[in-house]
Image 1 (cartoon, rainbow, N blue to C red):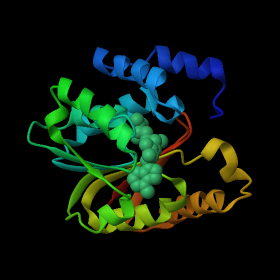
Image 2: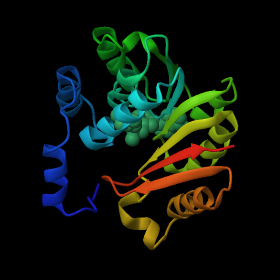
Image 3: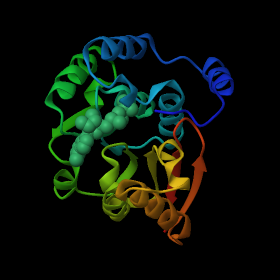
Image 4: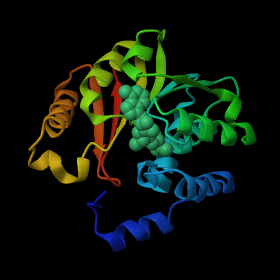
Length: 212
Ligand SMILES: C[S@@+](CC[C@H](N)C(=O)[O-])C[C@H]1O[C@@H](n2cnc3c(N)ncnc32)[C@H](O)[C@@H]1O
């Protein structure tokens, strides 16, 4: 992934952000060693942002679309209350198996339920209302994910979308996926039911709050 913010600035922000817990640092190393595509993992800046939002918002019912090896899931769970539940959607059985070994070792792992399968199918089986959702799976379905999650979200609930800058391709869209991200970003900004802040953290993080 290309970084859009100047590399020195990105490094400076990284160094001046709270460290993740040691188990999550270990999860990053283990992901790098054993799984392909370590760059899929959201990393410290996005992870600590999720933990911060979750700690402030105290969601009891949360959802993650695209869990991979569980870095962002554990970051969200860390901020949730003890009786909170985070449902994670994932299609990669190897990633699920890997993530579960870390959930077992975390004091927050018991808040996480993993559902294997395509998120759009899983979304049909989930009851609302949701307090907090992180969308980070295949970009082709971003608009569908957003619209379905919006329906399930309670007023005051948060929806956070990762990779909304898509390495800058949203500025000059050339593919269907680029167009989907452009359309999703525009729809959110124009939606009178929602307020949002589009952060240029890493590959772009859109924080959306349902206001009615
Ligand atoms: C960018 S990674 C998620 C990274 C993770 N959120 C983190 O920050 O640590 C995207 C994940 O979405 C999963 N995925 C892709 N298509 C999916 C689908 N249709 N339903 C559920 N998960 C999907 C992939 O297997 C991959 O593990």
